[in-house]
Image 1 (tube, rainbow, N blue to C red):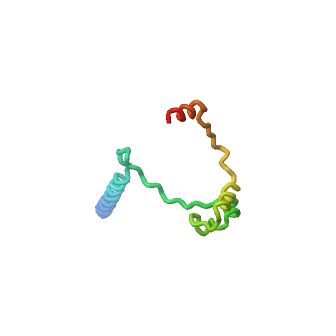
Image 2 (tube, rainbow, N blue to C red):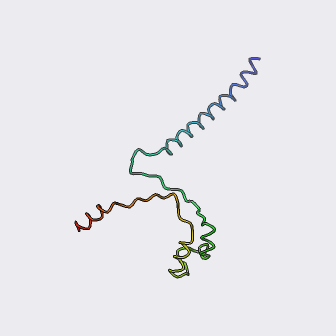
Image 3 (tube, rainbow, N blue to C red):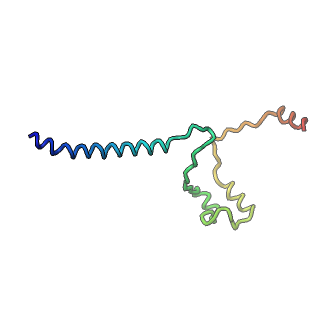
Length: 107
């Protein structure tokens, strides 16, 4: 019985040492991936694939080819962009008239 335990002991010691190495490696990787304390260092934003709304694709068919070099005229582009729904959740409060008048008087 003792011989069986002695035969298993080296294997379990090897396993323990292997697991210890793995844990140490994971801890090192975790330390590398931690956020820096410097507030001026930011992470890069991951690349995200964006898809256009179906209404926009229907109104501006060339958007799927290449958006920046649109063959449409400026008027056609305006019509296509304004044919899509706007964000209804936006709540914009313009500045009061007094602030606008003060800025005009200062200038």
